[in-house]
Image (tube, rainbow, N blue to C red; front, side, top):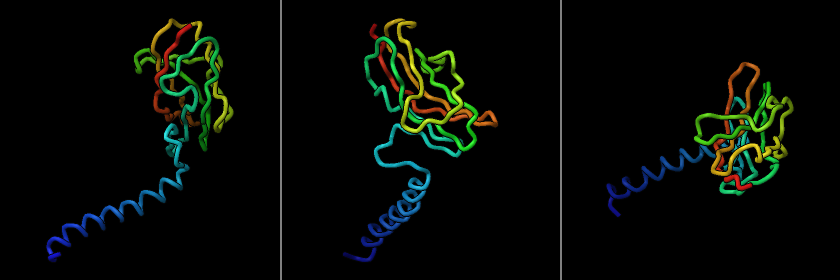
Length: 143
């Protein structure tokens, strides 16, 4: 291989390896683990819905499982939406004060809403009023 061709191959490869060496340790330190793509992690907290899974058909009362933690937790809530913009809490006691890691976050009585497509998300609010929301999970209510 001539020198110019080697540079064109080796320089981008060196950049990719350098970036990987910086990003991978940072992701490991933040608590992000392989297989936890459902979890949103930030300096404000970690939040995500494990169950129900995206595309699930729900009926009756459903237990929503996941994680909702923060170093300065004020409360967390679980919400649903028809349009992904206007959110309603799934339960009356929406200000849950105790952090949860891979456990039951809330119960949702789906008989109180019409059949159709919904989004679910969990939101952690810290003691300064800042929040972090999980990625929405698309589900279908079919009572």
